View 1 (cartoon, helix red, strand yellow):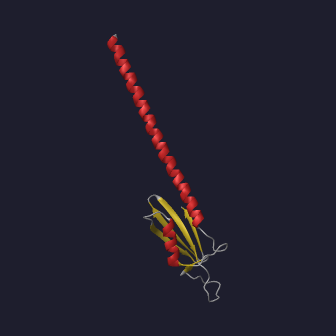
View 2 (cartoon, one colour; view 1 turned 90 degrees about the vertical axis):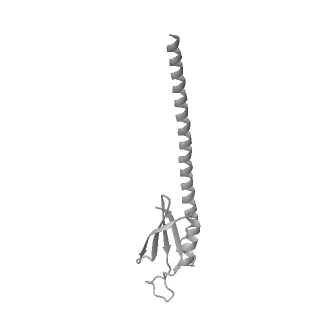
View 3 (cartoon, helix red, strand yellow; view 1 turned 135 degrees about the horizontal axis):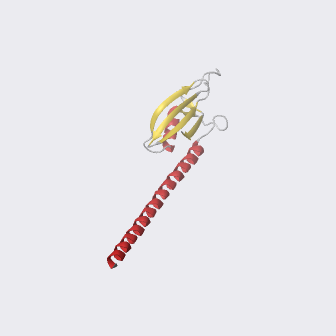
Length: 133
């Protein structure tokens, strides 16, 4: 009888220990996931703050200067994975990737200085829009 009680007691202690350890691991995982969400929210705010409109607050930069500006904002190790030019609106859309996060950057080009209102100057930008994809 004493052996039975002792073995039941040992099993009960092991059960409590096992349940307690699994709960503490869950708490650590939850904290890490929450931290990642906060970082993404901070990144979205940072991208929005770095964006500027070609209509409301145009800033003339060379295309090379704009590329450097964007690379200074995006995380280190970012790589360009796609680039398309939308001729009807004068926008170069570039997709970048860092780790598992993709960014879309839209470089808005001004009209050429020669007075022709249907040609965009691809060597300059007047606005940049940075977003998570």
